[in-house]
Image (cartoon, rainbow, N blue to C red; front, side, top):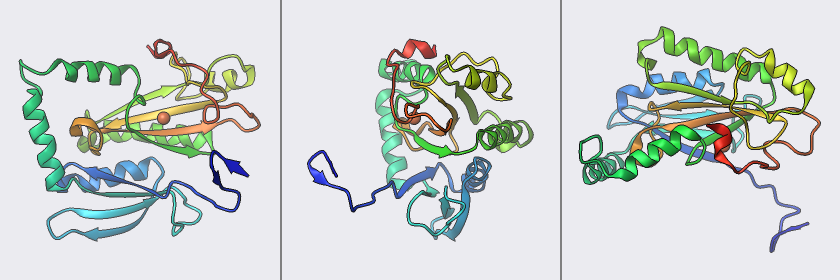
Length: 233
Ligand SMILES: [Fe+2]
């Protein structure tokens, strides 16, 4: 079968890995605990001579050595940290003379956590997703390393399917939520954190977890139906 111009029928292609960074060497253990709380499996830790550790995680708990579904995690390299520092200084970041582009970016990010670079994972159990995000909230409440460093935002499936609507009304994570996904028959949960700093200005990253209700051709990962971001306001 041809997709576009290239013959693909005998080739399997998937996203192999994403390479993420925590801000300072001492943030490593907390960043690891965060990813483990979100369900990733830590498979390797290797000390780095300049401080901190390099970690390998997989989202595939059933085949941990499989060469895709991998997250690498290590301290922000000095050259990258230096670049962000210089960029922030040039923009007057956090000062009275801050470039207006910074506030505009923050406003857009507050409206939609996935408008910019982010990393998304798919799970096949809504109960697991709900349980992991409840654990995330407990982590922030009980462990001061996470205090003020995690923000959870969730989107319900677009309304209209009575079975799904009822399930979400009974959910510890989605009951009463008035933010919605761009498509149908699935839900999203986002964790915004500055314990992992990839993304513009090294302010933090958004990690997304999705669940798609089984049995539907059209769902949040197959078709985006809404483009108006105001639905999320
Ligand atoms: Fe997304």
